[in-house]
Length: 311
Figure 1 (cartoon, helix red, strand yellow):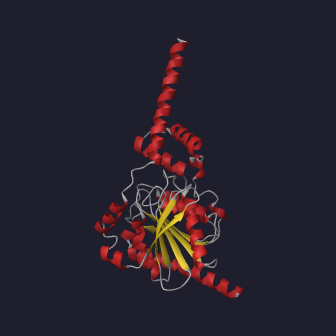
Figure 2 (cartoon, one colour; figure 1 turned 180 degrees about the horizontal axis):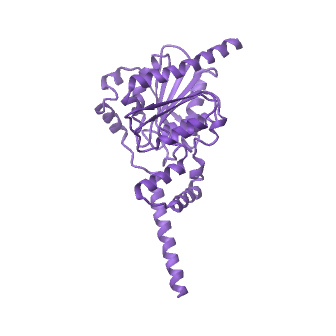
Figure 3 (cartoon, helix red, strand yellow; figure 1 turned 180 degrees about the vertical axis):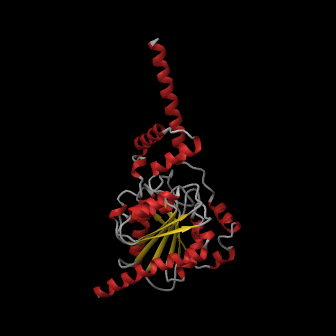
């Protein structure tokens, strides 16, 4: 009797670990769109024009990450000035998904840097970490721009989805970030996984998430609770514009509402009707641009006034 119970427990444990291991692999190694495919699909979706892209002045960049791989980016300069924005794309995509924002910021005198996340596009990295290492990669880009443009550079961040979560994480840690635009970010990665699990399976298999997190901790040194943009958000002084599509079925709108409530100080909220996940700009480009420019204008004025007082 006891032998059968022990054997059954052993089998259940083995199957659970095997299942967790497979899910862990699927989570860290999601199917990415090839770099060239993201470019072609961007054109097909009408996000940008092939001729416009090739005629726009740009510089291709490769820099070292702080974790032993190369990071790929494209720098779109303006004629002068020290304003620059870093734009980070969503999961499975590439920097081409961010090109639609270039002209909007260049019209405001911003240099624009588009960057590929680790494990995406032409950047290195063996797996995606949902913001844990990506925030460090954004810091590497900030360090590069600060060195290139000087310590008094006016640096902003805009991120979509994974890029937004990563942007929020580094914005809490790096005071050189003058503003952050977080488009459809999750508030807490473990909570998002629980939501997705419940939505897709109708079962509360939360222990499975804990097992996967533990396995990742053992192998890679981080776990799901380490990825939580909402954690400590009330302490950051960085101005944040939160954006979310009201029809987003991938990341709950409530997560952005929770972060907006948690943030203290300079903050704005822009909710876009009829917009799905990472579709706010495509759904309402004019409204999106107006909200972004309105948000940045006040921050620029304060920055310029403070800099003038120091000289």
